[in-house]
Amino acid sequence: MKFVDEASIRVEGGDGGDGCASFRREKYIPRGGPDGGDGGNGGSVWLRADEGLNTLADFRHERKFSAQRGENGMGKQRYGKSGQDIEIAVPVGTLVSDADTGELIGELLEHGQRILVARGGKGGLGNVHFKSSTNRAPRQHTSGTKADRRNLQMELRLLADVGLLGMPNAGKSTLIRAVSSARPRVADYPFTTLYPNLGVVSVGAARSFVVADIPGLIEGAAEGAGLGIQFLKHLDRTRLILHVIDAVPMDPAQDPVADADTIVRELARYSEALAQKERWVVLNKLDLLPEADREAHARALLERLEWEGPVYRISALSGEGTTPLVQDVMNRLEAMDEEAREAEEVAMRQTKDGEGDPA
Image (cartoon, rainbow, N blue to C red; front, side, top):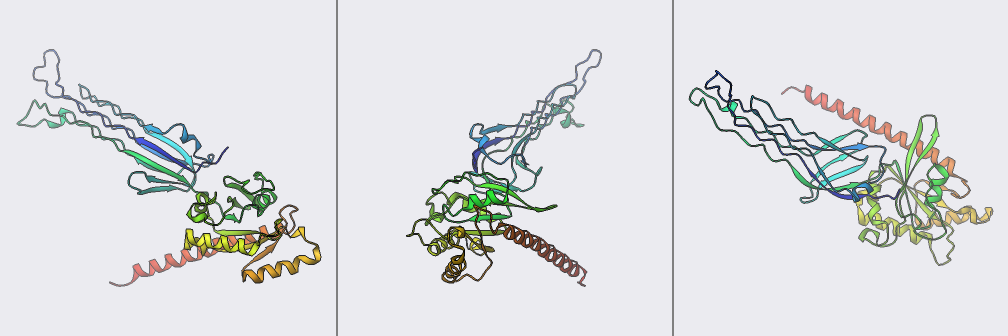
């Protein structure tokens, strides 16, 4: 299924039903008094996260969603039936904004999570509510209130632990095929990846992580060039970036160091926070060199990159070097989880200590 990561829809809650102005009419009971019932509440519109979905493509065809209107009140103090709510299933990772104001309504980050996006109207009051000692035959009643009506902008941002980043043809798709069950298209020309691919990497019993293959970037991506701009945002939610570099490009005029510098500049132009995210260098395709020359070639590239962080030498095609890579990634993600738990515990202790201080 083709990946679609943005959609615009209109949602309309159901209006509330009107209250009824009615009087009791029964044989032998004169002056029966008011008996108009209330109108029913209108239905609301909810968005619900569904982990079984991975695209917003369905919203290309259906763009308007309306909840049911509340029924009007009736005589004999019969209340109108409330309109039914509707739920719209969207992928986990969907951001929802008001298309007219730009206000962020919410994010759906967990399976089953719901967000109210259009509240139904409230039912009106029947005339039975307006009876008093001075007004025994009230004709007043109220109409149901109008429901919310909104134009929504939905944007899907992938929820992945690790993002694969690099120039077109760096070997990202081959790498995700080598370490997971994902099967993205692979070819020997640029831009074979036209939309992100997700893969689950299993490292052992109950140990796994999700990796996202982000389409290749080119210079100017942060300003809209090429295919990368619309997918840079997906890196915001990754915890670790693997910067895949074609260490032995087929074109002699192509400089791996210049390509890597281009990627770093585009990250900074898009978001300084993204540029500061933890990033590891993965030198790919070293198997194209004689074994005796590989280490010297890798060291020369790293010196020119002035890179002092983690680096891995692999061949995505043969799988060489990928096992240590995924094991170290898993270990690092688990360490991040532990660091987050410790930070949360410290914050909770500080909060309790602050609450216990004398005024």
